[in-house]
Image (cartoon, rainbow, N blue to C red; front, side, top):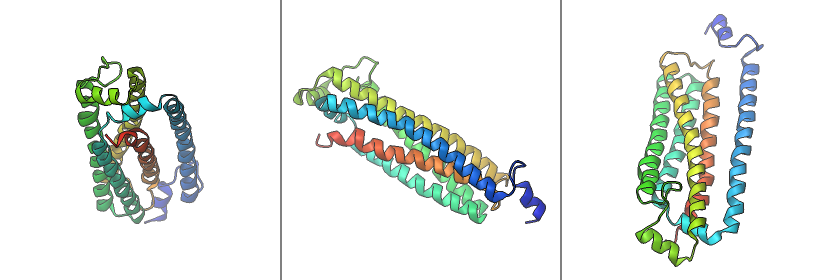
Length: 228
């Protein structure tokens, strides 16, 4: 690559590519720190109310489908692998491999969102365990709650936490899907090269962060009621 081409990959406010890379990484880590504080507040609130209503949260967790949650966990862990391979391909300047791994990551992200929407949220809505939509458990769900002598108000509170925390996580996934789509277009047009791949690395950090958040959400929400 010519020196002129290499210089073109560096924005005018930076002296060289190394400085540009360090600035991008620093900025992304600051952004992720604010995200950690946001989710930390959610986790702290969840922990407080879980200690206040342990039986209700246990009953509420039993309303969730652990198998589907575990499947989505595997999907996200796999997407972290494909995202890491995409970053590696970008660093080596392997355009075709980069596009392939970005598409795989995108498909896995869409799979996660599709499963969450169709087989969890929609199911919760039609079985009347979605808070704010006529919360009224019936059949096996009601029997499970009554067996634990859990107050319905406490169970509904758990479902509020479940929908809000997984909803915020899904919103971050949607943002990630948008970023991946943009990266695929950029890579297809040849705008991502071995000497200009910061955007892929920063997107990778974001995607891994979202995956890690789910690694915490899964046991906190799903694994309380695994004995059901």
